[in-house]
Structures are given as C-alpha cells and as structure tokens.
Image 1: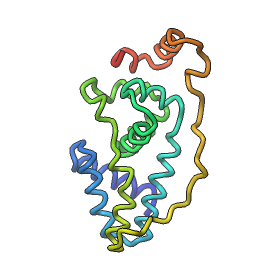
Image 2 (image 1 turned 45 degrees about the vertical axis):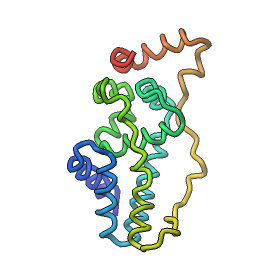
Image 3 (image 1 turned 135 degrees about the horizontal axis):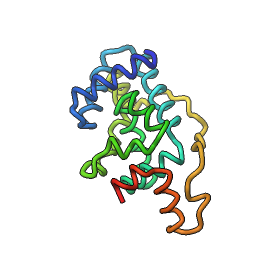
Length: 176
C-alpha cells in the first residue's frame, strides 16, 4: 500500500458512504480485512502520518470556531478531514478559511468522525481474529502542533475576534 492507494480507498469509500462517516469506516474496514496484515499496518501508519501532519494551530482555530469542540473533538475533526479525500485535505491545510466554503451551517456539528480513528485497529483485530491484539504503531513522539494560535498574539476576546475575522473571513462570515 502506498499513499496513492490510500487516497483512492478514502475517495471510493467516501463516495459509497454518501458522507456517512460511520458507514465509511465500515467500508474501509471491510476492504482492509481482505488485504494482508502488512497492508493494514501501512494503512494505519499513513492515516496517522496525515493525522499528525494536519495538527496545526491555524486549522484548529478555524475548525474550532465552526464546531466549538475540545481536544477529543479536534482528533475527531482531523479524522473527518482526512476522510474527505486528498483534494479537500490538502486545500484545507493550505488555507483553513476554505472550511467556510465546504461546510454548511447545518453540518457544522457533523465534522467529527471518531469511528475513523479506529479503522486500522478494527481491521487488524478482525483479520487476526484476536480481540486482544494491538496493531503495531510507531508513535510520532507526541508531535507538537505546527504554527501559532491566534490566541498567542491577542489579549482579549475582542482582539481575538478581530484577528480571526481578518484571517478567516469566510469562516467568520458563515459561522459567526
């Protein structure tokens, strides 16, 4: 498995699930179960490399403004972002304000996908038929988020709001 195959799997399951992230997780698990163990492990490593890569303060600022979530929600959001596909993932990392274009006000609380965090582990356990096994994973030594939060340079909520509005005008206009 390589990154190209990973993104093809994400895209195929996203389309087949019609945006239902729990269904998408099940479809990915079913596909991975048919592969060799090494491919399941590679899926997991690619997923978490992408997951860690999008741990950025600017993205967290914009996404948290939309969904108003904490640490657990931040993880669930990053899983959701990955499973939107390569084009959305890369576009949002380049410019988090794009979230204002791709997320509707009605869907602002549907941008969490906890079930997608455990796909590799579930496929691994099913493939080996042993619930007590844990997929081998090489941790990234608790990666440090990239960039800088808007909160670092402001002293009040009013200053933050002004800075946010200037940096993320689409997100501000849609979700304020």
